Image (tube, rainbow, N blue to C red; front, top):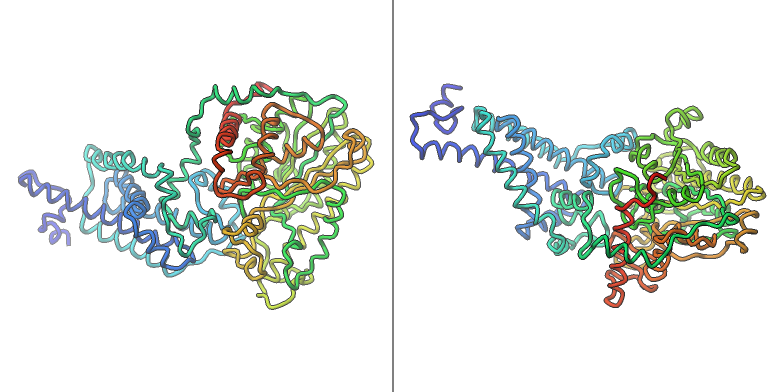
Length: 615
């Protein structure tokens, strides 16, 4: 076989010194065409996975414009060339680069399938977390498309082993390396072009206002590389630090008066939704009565989040920091925990899950939480549950409050018991949904309601224990996002819940959860009112503003600036929707554009300029 291949000059392992220049040129061009063609072909193949379960017409939409096609295929070519540079063999470059492209495409496919959430660049830094959450909770599968891609990857590798033999010398590897660098330099401006990205119109079978479906409409590698922009934060147009400081200087930091230092216990609830609001036929919602009783003696409202069915930390960290969008936390960042610590508060909390999940063990300290309890060495000693129950978490929150009777106290905890997905089989709970629904839908909603109502019971117990405590305290509790309810929201569709993002009702249903602020009797005496009623619908970045208003605190200069912004822009969504002066809109009206840019500049400054020194 080798002797036969050596007789064909294009298939030889290396050139011969006696060959004329034209022959060497054809030889190297042949190898380049094979490798680049193989990478481009594989790039087109893996793009088929990007459409997920949507009609194949979405794939055809990728091909309607050259830039969408090229920007999806080029990263696969780059991966193949990069592997070729490292290993020096065409077959190895194609196989390993292609395997990486295939793996990323599969990760995106399954992440959307199970969590309605696409793969972003920043997810590459959370692979351990993703693997842990997927382990045992989702059933992976293989479909025909995956089999075809795998077969082509193996077949292409074998062909290249025959048709592009030999190994590059180290100096020769500079050529594919240069090609990788040039491709990246040439293409990056296209990936970083917001107007070009927004101009894509592949939405005949997709919903533009769904973050996930908008992503799918662009393919996979194009939006994946585009998401680097969010990982590496770029300042907004016209931003200057001096201008932001000038805006903030219109306000002065205010201390909390000593006689108004009320303790705060904040609890974020995983995937909380009040399904009694949706009028679902055949659904027994009587279990919500307990929560509604707690709402009746609290100040409550709608929290319009950036996320749906996943992405817990977005709401969590937006509330804690006052940011409307997140950046990567690698150092201390301004937050309400830091502000309260500057006022003499103890700031701590609990999350009965792994400390490395979303890197909370480090990032929580960056946000000013001095002590944080996790599963490791703590809640794991109380229960064997994969997601420890709130019957353990909430009593521990109360115990920690009791241990801190001296200084005013701030606690920020995140539960995990109600984390999805929810069992679609019988878990021994009396069925709560009757009617012409699938068995999976009936079981999922039943098992979901069972766990959140158990949390309601624990929350009611906590409030009863705090009600007559002589130490003034408020409890702030809120959801992070709506629960997962079937692949591609199928159970919501079965139950007739409107999640159509093109409608106002669908938008608010899709992204809204509830918040509740409750005060014990000692706190009510200090603030001088009952703290009841319906509050505004707001983005998570304003939740602490609402709390401070109820407590009569002015807070830092940033908090005061955001108070003014909240009255104008109570909802600022990273999904491209805004509530401006009470009206939901897709763009900020011209008469509010200048004020909105002030909001953006203040947010940029607050995220990136730590103001609490060694607090």
